[in-house]
Length: 235
Image (spheres, rainbow, N blue to C red):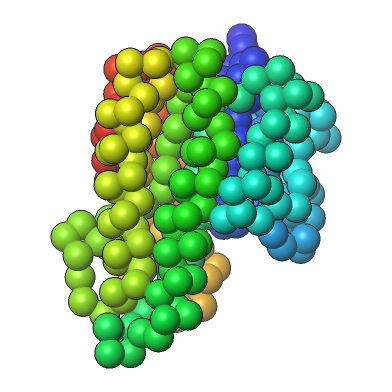
């Protein structure tokens, strides 16, 4: 039986990271063609090794700066030309930096905005015109449960991810009449190697497996989720 994403073409930014790999593999299992713009060759190699040999013809990976609108637009155009369309976008690039306002310099502020918010803008800007033209699209953006409500101690990250949430809801309103849905997932602390290294003594009982977040993203990317838009799905 074909998977729920069979025949669909998905762009997954951040698709070589800890969560991104889980999303990429889930989309492949569900039958999609997956296009991944990457930044770190070692992460690309690790992802490729995890992809089943039978699925490798459905994976496209190219080095792209997702925050660069021109580069992201060119990547989307290349995928649309080679695969005929773009049905889904998962905007999963992100990064974390701690620090209060007094501890945060301008470079950190800009880096958090670029990694978390500008990348979502660039990815959406690159694919939404094609989706609107096709009157079909599924966009899922990765935000964070930690910023709802805003907390102290990581102000640049909080503002960037809060901006991602506002961007999601605004874009959902702009595209809802065009057959395009836009939703966000808001994971709590995910069980990743980076989080384990950063918090070696933490109680990981409530940490969320990346596969569970990938499941939620895959559900929102399905054709059957046509009436879900502007939603913030916490996990």
